[in-house]
Every structure is written in structure tokens, then in C-alpha cells.
Image 1 (tube, one colour):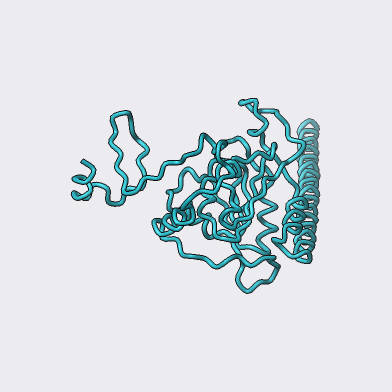
Image 2 (cartoon, one colour):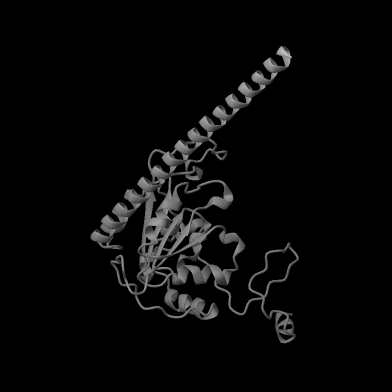
Length: 279
């Protein structure tokens, strides 16, 4: 049946079927079945025969060019900025990286930054492209890390959560294909508002200085550039604080002016009433 449908061109342009039931017929040109259990817990550290061939087949299927190995450390002022991919997990309202914006603003001095709001709304091809093109990936823990298989050799991947847990290392250690992966534990998370009762689902904040320090220690960015990022961020905070102070002063001045005008109007009304009484 599959051969007949294939010859009729029924599979042209079809990437993956999501709407299916027990009676759905699935046809594959090639089918690879994992031998490991759920999350790969039974075979996380095994060598996988033919894995590199499988990875190259994925690159060809999604038309991903072979990238040269990433050359780190990166620095401010490079002729061609390396690419950084961020994911805050904000679309799900859990595991949300709450203060990712200032980190992205700082990293933009070194990297060309892409912020994906919801990987679930991207096609598999677009997800693969984002992971493949990124030199640095800073993301909240989540299912999108299945795409780490598309990362280019030499990429740096940081998986951030309140527990530091990572099923990436269980299922497919990225070091097997030349990718540096770090599971980052964020201390001091609160369970407030976590409906699942699992600390892994807690939202979190992580200061820019912690991110920069980790990137410098891992050789992702130069120490001098790391210091410059922190200085620029402090300057930006100072500017925003000054603007806030100016806004507060302006608000106070507007309130004072309004009160003065109201007093003038009130005095004018009183004078008018006195004149009318005298007449």
C-alpha cells in the first residue's frame, strides 16, 4: 500500500503526521527505531553504531549545510558576529526564564541574537535550522533540546533550570558529536505558582554576571569582552535608573502644576461668589 501511495505522490511535501489514531497508516522511506528506553535512561552512555551517518542523513534531509567548527572564544567587535539562540519557555507559563531580556541585550554586543518565543509553532525544518546555525544556545530546560542533534560541531549549549536536570545527557550526550553541553542549576527558585509541584517547572531568574562568568570559564567569550559586557550592562542600568528618576520628577512637577491650577480656579470662583453677594 505504501509503495502504491508513494508512486501516486501522496507523500510529497509531508514532513510529519500529527493527527492520527489507531487506524492511521504510516509509511516511511527509512525508519530508525531507538533501542533505548524513555529518556534514554537505559543506554545514555553507549556508543551508537552508525550514529554519525544518521546525523549526516538528517542534515541532508533538512538541507543543512556543513558548517566549519565554531572558533571560540568570541569577543566584542568581531567582523562577523557569531549567532546566539535564546528560548525563554515563556509560551508555556512554566520554567520561564524571567530576566532573559537583559542577558540578550548584553549578548547582542558579541552575538547576533535570535529569540524564539515558541518552538512548537515552528516546522521541524525551521527548528533544525535554528539549532544548526547557532554557535551559542542559552535556553530554559524543555523538549526543544531534542533538536540538539542538529547542532554544528563546536557549538556551546546551556540548558538552564531550577534543578539542573537534563535528559539530553541521558539520551544523547552531545559530546559524542562535538557539542559542548552544560546543564545549569539555578539556586533559590520558589515553588510559588508551580501547579505541578515539581521544582523543575518553577520559573527562574539568573543574573547576567552568573551567565557571563560561566561563559568566560568555559572559553565561550574572552575575559576582556565579558568584563565589557558587564560594564555596558551597568551603564544601561544607570541610564534606565536616571530616566526613571526623571520620570518621577516630571510626574511630581505635573502633580504640583495641576494642584496650583486647581487652587487658582478655586480662588477665582470664590472671588466671583463674593462679588455676586456684594451686588
